[in-house]
Amino acid sequence: MAAAAECDVVMAEATAAEPEPELPDDEETRREAESFKEQGNAYYAKKDYNEAYNYYTKAIDMCPKNASYYGNRAATLMMLGRFREALGDAQQSVRLDDSFVRGHLREGKCHLSLGNAMAACRCFQKALELDHRNTQAQQEFKNATAVEEYEKIAEMDFEKRDYRKVVFCMDRALEFAPACHRFKILKAECLALLGRYPEAQSVASDILRMDSTNADALYVRGLCLYYEDCIEKAVQFFVQALRMAPDHEKACLACRNAKALKAKKEDGNKAFKDGNYKLAYELYTEALGIDPNNIKTNAKLYCNRGTVNAKLRKLDDAIEDCTNAVKLDDTYIKAYLRRAQCYIDTEQYEEAVRDYEKVYQTEKTKEHKQLLKNAQLELKKSKRKDYYKILGVDKNASEDEIKKAYRKRALMHHPDRHSGASAEVQKEEEKKFKEVGEAFTILSDPKKKTRYDSGQDLDEEGMNMGDFDANNIFKAFFGGPGGFSFEASGPGNFFFQFG
Image (cartoon, rainbow, N blue to C red; front, side, top):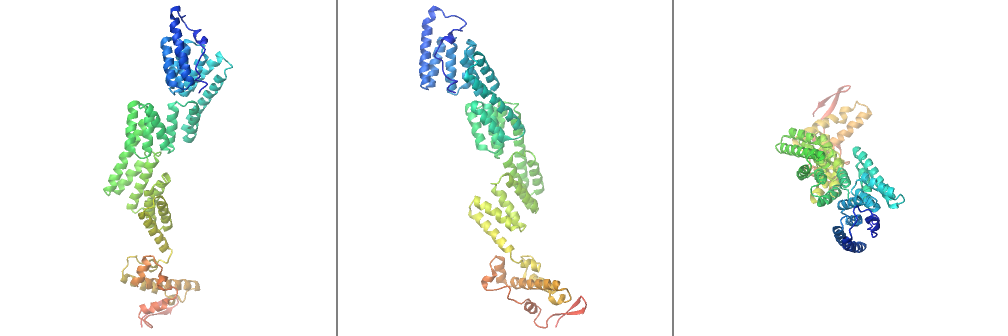
């Protein structure tokens, strides 16, 4: 930059090509203008570019047809980062003197800084025609060619949706074209599409601070909000972008999608609140088809649809929806909580514990700790014998229902009933008969049943479940010795005999 923006001290090359010779009575004006230029040079050397700009402007005002003065002011404007103004001065300098090599270099440098690599190449080629050994022109021509190549690659990669590669290319191009809004906007758009919203917003906001009417920057700002599920605010930016550029296709499409998503989601929420779960499911499904790129909103839609499926008792579908939600947004606590509850309801306790652990690690609240504790308890209980299942009764079964269930299962699995079966079958039925006795012993005793239901260890009360005799329980239930027996009436046939 410093080499490209070096100001001119020698005047001969500039004044030699002036179209009209200065009249003798203008000598004083020329001397005064030259004095202003020298003072500008002094301030430029001290890097006081604002003062340098002021003195070069005075010189130009005195002698508006001097190419060197415009060239020096262009160099100063470049150091101030005002490349568009610098471009105008550089172009004026070469209009006044087409052989002004530094003028062509500065014009090329301004074009390149603003992202017009093709125009920059033409300027650097012109400088090389005038001075083929000019090393600065040679290097800048290479830089401009590289920027052209980065542009082409980025365009192809954007079509392929390889947004990371586009960001890479734009970063390289911006090293040579730091004032190119087009490159910055393309980078910001790709950052938004990659989910790097703060970075994308930062780039777009920087441009809007310099140019509040930049439709592309307004679009990218809206895109970030849209992808962060701030749809109402996003629409405002899209509408503003379309005011600045009514034919902005991307802003038009994004605005349409945002409005459609907002409407469908709100309609789905209303149907859910009204208890119309079937309609809510349909509306959430339609909303999911609007824009697959909107990850955060779609994650919420999947979770909402999962909640609907849970209400409809389609628990496997609910789990699948919540899984899709956390695939899109692995920080989405609500989806983990919904899925964990569905796992509990389907007795998939290990999966429920994993989800609650994830939630508690993210948000260490008392509520989440209790949910994790409850799931761990259910997991512990699930690994014990399920006495309700053994008896074939519900967990809320009454005392009479438990007795009836025991009577039925005890008779079904009593060893005497299977005395004619194979040794393997006899062993299996004996095991089941013992388990039925265990189940009845626990569930028929209110205190033991309470401990069992709460997940407490029954052995803590000194009861070893392997120490009791299932036959004694059977005899006690059916009225003691001689109260009941099995008698064979033929191979494989039995009848009940009461004493």
